[in-house]
Length: 379
Image (cartoon, rainbow, N blue to C red; front, side):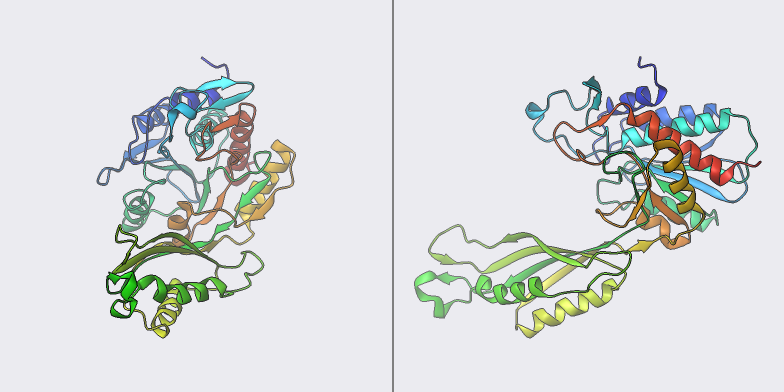
């Protein structure tokens, strides 16, 4: 047993092989801890996804800590220095899948709440937890469904801290106040298969798609704004082959993604791309997947509390950012909650030998506790 409760809880969580959408008993462990300090806990399973909603208090404002127990697969386990699902401390680092993303941060939110409640000081409002096992997956039956359920019964989250690994060097040095939107297109270009020596009798989808793809890459979608970097367009997959070197393929498939700012609505992006494809006279079909719209939390009570906590606890002047990928904050923000992300460092997330500095775990836990004190404690 490790002497620090946050480190020990993180190790207990890492030891559970909770690859999306499996929870592997993580939430049951967390629920037991929260019940012991007075939280009302509600399990919300949807499909194969496990979700936990826990709340202590019945009044507003509701300060919610959001996180996930699922992790990405470990990849080639022979490349790991340790067993990815057997937490181990080496040279001052806690190693294992999920150490940074985000079982370490999740453990820190739990121990922070335990200390905040055990302190015995009165506080206004409520502390809540929204925990899912589907953040790393398709994110359909996780946080999105829990939020829909809460809305249906008019239960509101006012402030939300997502414990994702947002920091660069020291926990709290970067606070995410928003995220870009994510729009993926899966396109099929139709051609006519034929012999490469008789190209005039075939129709090569690669030849047809290339000019349109070049144009899409050359577009300056926007210049960004005060809070967001410019919108980006990237191709993630292109496939076109008959399996033979002397045959022109009949189809081409491709996937691309746009990470877009508040300068755009996803509908307008779709229309612009489809107009370009149409102008190139392509015979195509396309399917769109919208992972989430961009969101931004204006400077206010929550951002001020988080920045003050980072300065007091970690000794850092936090930088506000909207960089990185997407998070479940995209499902919480649209319904009026102020959402930020602050957590551990992210240098090793989704990598072989994922790890986090052991000393950072009690530090981020203390930072979370300080946010609770600043947001809810009465004088």
